[in-house]
Length: 490
Image 1: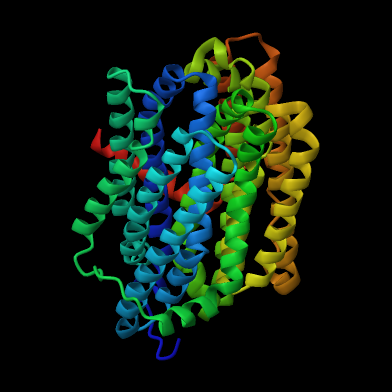
Image 2 (image 1 turned 90 degrees about the vertical axis):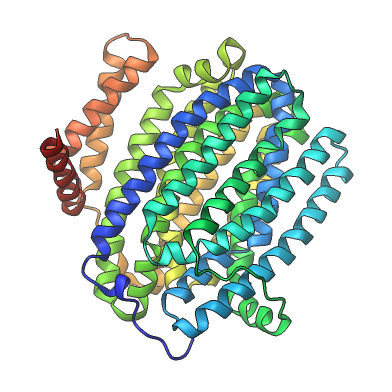
């Protein structure tokens, strides 16, 4: 865009600290939301049969694919452009984005409902896709209004919005369980949470444009910028949900329920890297435009941080699988334990995917994203047809892990091909692997209940990371500052 002007908050020296603090706040809020959600998810899984939960998970996956196809990467590209645009351009940009999102989401919902009907799914699932589609329209408006919050690094406000949505969802599920509701009403819970998020966003963004602009000429301009990236994003969303949808079609609703229950845990952990990477994305986009050294430094610290956090979460998922499944569904979810442990292997790759995806987007490498996601999508279909019919939920888990590893590798190769100077710092990798080895050894050394075994392993991993000084100094300083503040207040 022409006539660019500096964005003070992004160009200032305090941007990095705000991202660390704000990103940490969003993760903390997300963790609290997960804790709240852990009150509702077990209620839902225990209330429904495994087959019913399979239908619920399948409808949710179809809605997720619709969202990805309709969104088409618009949000990421608009944040990048908004970060470098003049004030005069921003209002028109967001109004046009809002109109385009509403139009594309409406078409996507109609196609999704039609595909669910054509696939022969029962009426309760088809209706669920339609209801979730209404929620997608609400989410399209909310996400557009929240663009300014992202770019202005008002990450605490975004954290509050996330919390309001999660609390609404939890209360809704709990209320329906108490009322003894059947499967259908549970599809209303997610749209209700998105509506509350919309209201809170409306109250906290008084200057955001409220009305959409249905301008085909400007839509064409936006789509010309986002076209390749839109297809790439759609494929990335689709490939990740292929395993659930394929399991329901190739192995039945019960296997889909087992995989969906395990996958729910992975969805929770995998939300964290995207929150952290999204918090830093406006800075990456700005640095890619005007400061190569800052971009290199920021990406290096992001790689080091998310590698550590990713391995930590993968370790927790793999060792804590028996405890997690018992909390979610009791003995009826015992078949999900090996599925969840397998999925835990892919968690670190998911964290690295988030880092490199936003790096490629910052550099306008849309075709690289398209190629990598296209390969992953084709691999998802091939592996699903090969593994799921014979191995059910376990086969779907290995499909997911393979795809995450493939995508992380593809993104890394694409990034280094165009910018060899952005090679990630690998000096800390041996320290992380040492921490992982010590954690696994300590976790299995003494027979303990799964929850205690997991806590011991996590403690050992953290001690090794601290002892070997693997943590980036910025994160260490931020943690020390927070600890000093906490001690002073106490």
